[in-house]
Length: 468
Image (cartoon, rainbow, N blue to C red; front, side, top):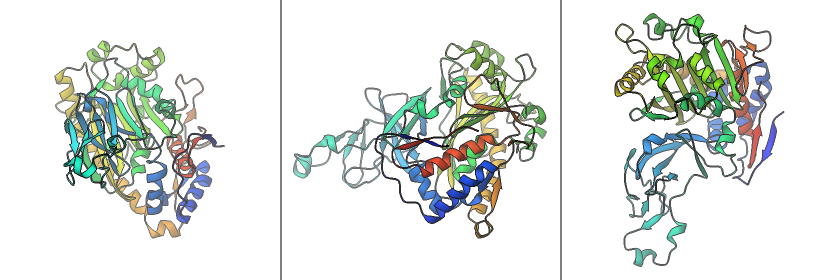
């Protein structure tokens, strides 16, 4: 049963379109049997409801603190389809501001990033400080003398919070605090982003590229779709880009960390096994980490891990693993990529892709990690070109008349009782529910259970969905 938690009043939930109601009903009844209606990946009414119920309410990742390190730094990012300015003001405080002038709603920030003392609307010249305060306008005394400036600043997101350098915001004042929303997922973020107390930083500006796919395909894949590795990514092993044999790579855990948030580890059975440790980062670097922020259990998992892949609901995905762009010239090295699947309609996304490195890495190590990432997980990378082609056709199927008329259901049965070899782990040391091996789709079912609950939730209600 889904438990409903009441919170302060939020905007009223829009009435459900009949097609949305029908697809959600099919998802609710089918998911316990591993069935997902294809229509949720393409229906335009479902998409409009998602913008309000998912992106309009959930905590959404926007930027890393290292992107706005200095006072006056800013970047422009999105919540759903809407632009927000992430800025650091002259006192060093972070802000997330709706990019729309209070006078006529015109976009005030015309660059993707930079450093500034103010933002000025190009229409009538209203000028705002980096904390969003209205500080002036042309001919102020004649035009607006006596008007309260304090009531006419840029509108902030309802809540803003950071976790280990990751900046999130929500448009819903009733949303639970960020760490409560992350739940058990924070434990797993700790063992990657908190593995070294010095933290991480972005390596270059994010890549951006558009794909004709639905945003849920990316979130679904990074929740832990490891089954496709031996088919779609077979060439990666053939060219020596990844150092762990396929069958060995499938040994590991799927974890439903918290409602909606899932991840997967490829992991050695014990710390003495040969092969990459600490996600493939150089041994000397790993030995220098200050691991005082994490527990012995977290450290053991990080030490044994070859691959970490996960998704924070709705659209923030993380990947850490050893990679090389050219196996004949460079050995694999650890890379960290984070990305968001920015919706641009029911059949299109803009992928935002960042590469991160630990601050204590040498310039040469950062350069190697960045180049290895570019050759594998980027707009021109081998993995990216593999993945996006199937996602395009998933969205096409979701929009098709045939899928609607035939009531076409997608199969998410892997790992259910009696299906496959994966079994639930009783002694997993971290939070959530864990399964061994990675032949399992409970992590995706966790995504869609929470998705369904959020799509149904009324204003001020936050579902507490049980794990499987």
